[in-house]
Amino acid sequence: MKATAKAPANIAFIKYWGKLDEKLRLPCNDSISMNLSHAFTITTVEFSDKYHKDEFIFMSNVILGRSEATTPESDSGQARMTKQDVKEEQRVIKQLDRIRKIADSKLFAKVVTKNSFPKGTGIASSASGFAALTLAAAAALNLKLSEKELSILARLGSGSACRSIPDGFVEWKSGNTSVESYAYSLFDENYWDLKDIIVLVSPEEKKTSSSKGHENVNSSLFFKTRLANLPDKIKRFKKALQEKNINIFGELLEGEAVELHTIMMTQSPPLFYWNSATMDIIKKVQDWREQGLSVYFTIDAGPNVHLICGKKEEKIVLVKLKESGHVDNLIINSPAKGAKIIDQHLF
Ligand code: PMV
Image (cartoon, rainbow, N blue to C red; front, side, top):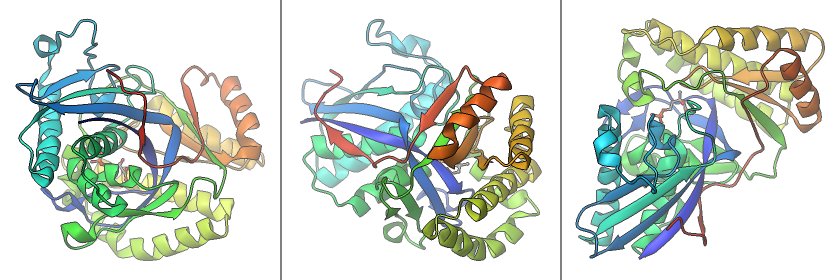
């Protein structure tokens, strides 16, 4: 009754922002992402009658967007729990409850989890976190679920987690009901060797979680326009992906990131996730492109910038980053497989 899963974080090329159904986490629009090879979560779940409540150990802090680590050595987590931690724990328990219900089990669980990315980097890890938790818990209870069922379950924990279940380049169809809203692979991880160089510009935890941010999306005057234009944009984006046309792909990618943040900044209350380093990198990317370098940016709900380029351009982008002083905190990713069961347990 013990299983361990490894799940990647994913970077959204076409963003999910806004929910049709809050509880079911049904999104307002389809989205497209790529799984990341070097930003992932590993989670071990054990169900047993030796546990009298659900227990959590976060081996490195970033899991589920936490700011404080609870290490197995100190194991004094409860005392150090912030309000945010308690909320996140409740979300994890809810997810365990969903899986227990399917398995008709009343057993409590011990959950130990760690991230590949370093403490305090400010990368949202709810996608990799909930994908790993869902797969490990389902396997520990011996449930035989399809990829689609796992994606739906992961979505109920955290929307974008559904995209961390299938391999490689992934599309999440919004759907009108829970069973229709799941992600599937458009292309596997070997399809296109794109690089995603994440520039971690801020170690700070964001003040407003994306979960919260989604709630006020309709207050932006521009949201309706975004939704009206998205189907055509997605069509063009998929064509560029199909043709591996990095220039059209990159232009759409950047436009989409700026559009997402325009909505965020014009919501009420407004969300300003960028900081001055974010803006600095955006400008640098524009300069580098003028010099003939094919590199594009995208940004999720935070200040960190994802630089997307081909394998050929990776070295020179790294040189440019070094020259501009942004070299300390980089995570270099290739496309990756989705969530998988692994043999090495964390306890
Ligand atoms: O799954 P959530 O609630 O963390 O929302 C993710 C929102 C964005 O990262 C901004 C976009 C996306 O599609 O991942």
